[in-house]
Image (cartoon, rainbow, N blue to C red; front, side, top):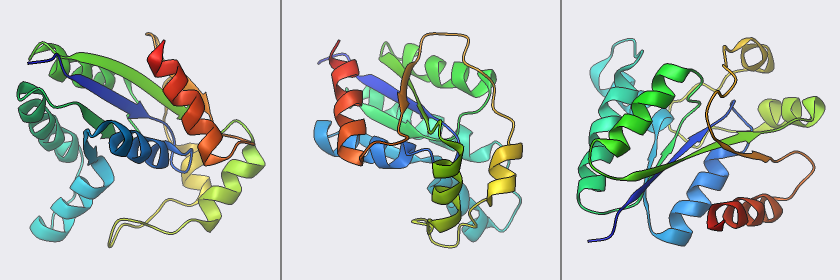
Length: 168
């Protein structure tokens, strides 16, 4: 059985991480888990305020699939070192590799436009407005991370850049 890889995506809302992570999942045939979907599912089905439960449930789902030798992709804001380390621990606990990927949009005007014009792909999910995105706590990376800046680029160009960096 091959050693599976966990691709750990992170980035602010509307940076392009869901688009790129979904494209990667389709290209390599990986299991895809979007934290927004898990968290909104918990809200809808269990009717309680979700905090870290979506991450903890997703850790379990991904760990089960990594054990089977299946490459996995986690798609989340992943804004703090704690969750970043927890994702990495999920992979290493079952002998899987992991790759940290941060997706950014460095052009403030473009990023604001994306936030203000996008619609939710997740049923019932209330998307943050621009002020909430600007105010979101997001820690700088302290470890190795592949960074993809999507500003001023097409989706195809951003994905080509990501895939090239992953192949190196």
